[in-house]
Length: 193
Image (cartoon, rainbow, N blue to C red):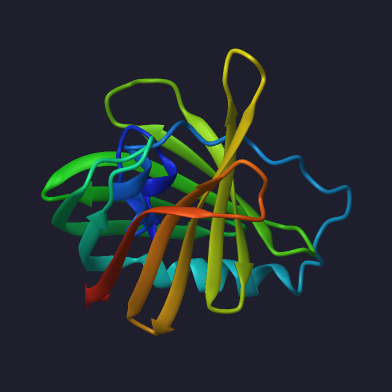
């Protein structure tokens, strides 16, 4: 799961693969919060799932030419230096040996949406986004609008194919029905912490 993919400036998506992809895309827009909240007994399951991101990862990404990406292949090494306290998980992402971003996750909704807060190491403004956990499929959605008000939707989809492997894709759409891939990739865990 390159969380950085969520961050446009980092291009690392899935928490693990996310970082790589987000850097190529517009900043995520926050998704409105639901009025209901998750019960305290259910909350740990989403945070426990997110904890799987902790550790070292090797990421292989392939991008295609699109309005939001350029064709390329890239391999990177990601280390998620994570810690947990009560209802929070925080992870400092280190990409190819360079500290890039601090991501803080909170989960407390019954619909399994979590919020992430991305704090860049260069002092640029922090941003936030959401992540939907549905079993082994985790989706990071956001949207942007142009000067005429036309909305383009983006998402990074992480699919856990095993406890230490993630297949991911980044896509965009103008109708949320037809999605066009901008990149795909694979991440595999190299260390637990």
